[in-house]
Amino acid sequence: MRRGCIAVGEFHCDGCGKLLKHPARYLAVEEKDGVEVDEGTVVRYCVDCCLEKSYAKYRSEKGESILTFLEVEPQSE
Ligand SMILES: [Zn+2]
Image 1 (spheres, rainbow, N blue to C red):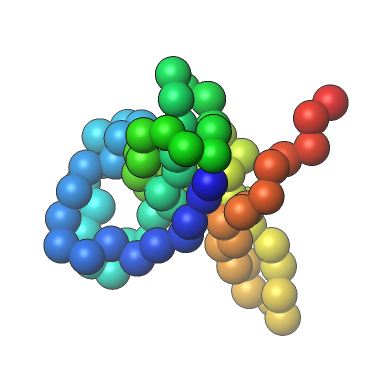
Image 2 (image 1 turned 180 degrees about the vertical axis):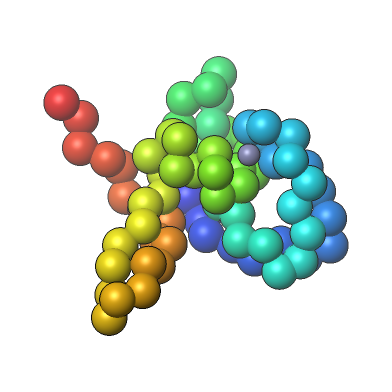
């Protein structure tokens, strides 16, 4: 399960170790052995890691680039 969140306090990204602090956006994902599952260990990823893992993307709206966390499974090929 994925949840887009706003950081409260400070913590490190579980992907790259970057320090995240309020009001940074991050994504909480449940994973087991590095694979996304419904019930697993909650890991927190910064925006950069989310983009790298295709958990988030930018879309354009009224000329602005808006970050969207993808809360559904990406299509498998
Ligand atoms: Zn990161």
